[in-house]
Image (cartoon, rainbow, N blue to C red):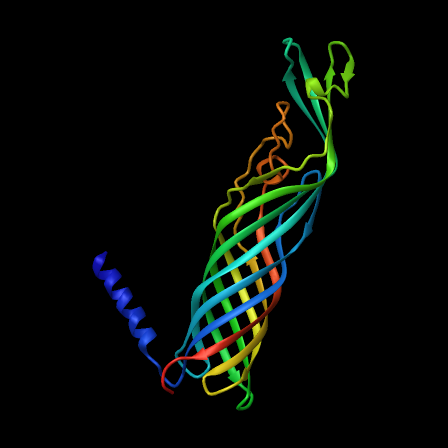
Length: 272
């Protein structure tokens, strides 16, 4: 294993140290667009939100037109849930009587945000139309690791009540027993699995100097695997616990998706 690791490191160092005419480049870029968390709610709707991306990458071209790229980057994704439903959960009150705890959600909204650290590996194709303008196509895959995933409720209400079927009566507006109208905001964190994403970019370069090209292009990222850890919990429990949408029976699958525009620089390495 040590020999293989040393061989791999030597290969990387050799590649980085080469400054052939075909080209080694350092690429810095930032971008923004629609960065959505794709999921379906059982009893509600999901709305896409915007996000941003920033990347530092190294490109090595084996020929004047064909190369590979890798590096490191960050990307944010977000979405908004709107729920309208009534949950019914069996419960026992302080007197030992069984009842049905009801939680009615009226236009209840929860916002989710996720920050990923990403490592891509892509193939690149470039073509020069003239001395100034060029085409650059990038396609491949990347591993995206969620480092911070949070949620916050931002609107709507939860109306709780208790139905006693043995007495055929429903109790409401009794805050001391947990039957009330809730409008407070809840915040919390999620835990997601890493994502494997397909990526593609189509852009153009403009030569600013012998060493620097300006880059602008469109990008597309699509999650290939489900990063959600499914759960069967309800949104609001009889003891007053609020569970985020992604930790309940409302969702079973989650895949990140982004589409936007990037702006950056390609810096040519080496003496030539």
